[in-house]
Amino acid sequence: MTPSTLAAILYGVLAIVGGGIGYAQARSKVSLISGSISGVLLILCAILAKQGNPVGIWGAIAITVLLIGVFIGRYLKTRKAMPAILMIVAGIVSLVVQVV
Image (tube, rainbow, N blue to C red):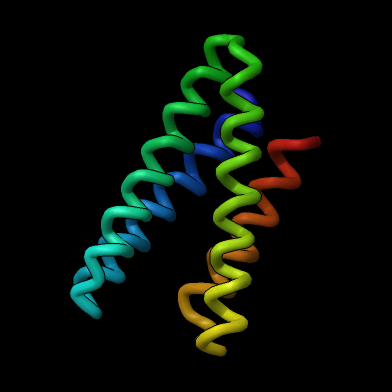
């Protein structure tokens, strides 16, 4: 397993767990659904990349960039550090590993 695929998997798991926590704490169905969808898509992209399909890594990069943008917007709107800063920092780290 390459670092790129591992980074996508870990960020995907973090998105799923974060969506679950968002639902548990605030009863946010949007967090649960969006976290689950984005997390599963990241994991599926990692699987495709592991199989040698270049669409996998490009898909993971696109989803990671999208999530970083969403959480930057959320932070600017709410000024609440959690979970936005965690997902932004984790997303940037994941993105750097995926690109390099």
